Image (cartoon, rainbow, N blue to C red; front, side, top):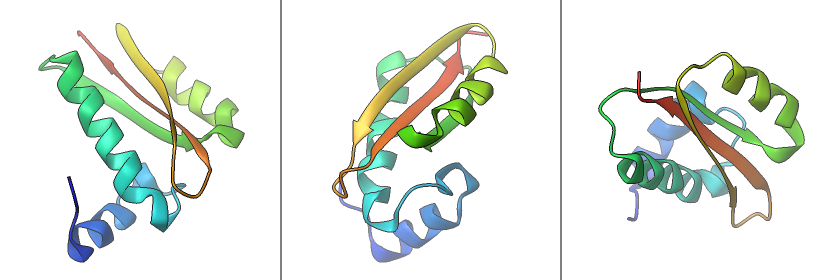
Length: 90
């Protein structure tokens, strides 16, 4: 899915993506969207997106969640590896 310039600006202003480089936004957002669809649960929260170098922060957010946990890695066009995830199944 290709995002418009306005959609990318909206994503850039979302605190979920505060650590994502602008050139990586579309790939990271699409990966997270695809993960949500693949889990197919109506109760999803505690979304998290961090560059791998901030794995400690990612783990802290993950550990604050409960129930099922989805966690994955995405290598973006800039070469940065991002950790993405959320909790589900409440």
